[in-house]
Image 1: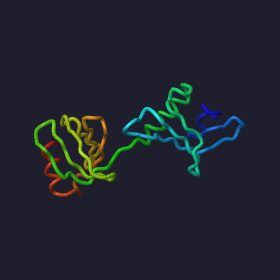
Image 2: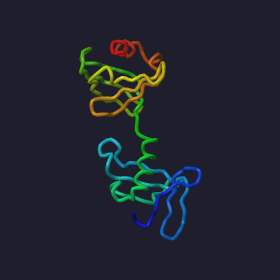
Image 3: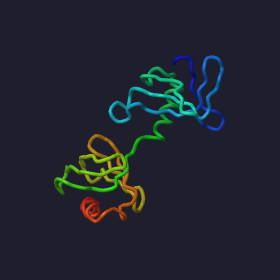
Image 4: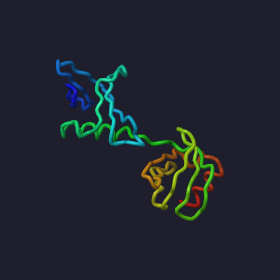
Length: 154
């Protein structure tokens, strides 16, 4: 992979080393297209934000490196935060929800009540029909209309 190796240091943080032996500590691994094409296009940047490595696929890595990258990515996956449920097509399932998130307005399809998981007494993780997870940090602090919709599904 372009003259770099990826490993973990003694502290468990990810590092990269180039073919000249220069070690880059505290690197970040990101997906180029985490939603539209999560399996292709990865960038590794140094602590200053400069890109060190670009690779198209995890297949370019050794099994050891692939494991490190996959583990690192799973810790920083994209989860939009729901601020408001602005509309709903039906109270029966499946239903389409119009929501406002920290990343803008979107629509999700809820297939089943089991797709709403409580992760604390106030926080919910909602998974839509496409497998995208949305976080509702505090169901008690959202607006009245959103609470009313949620209560019908909880």
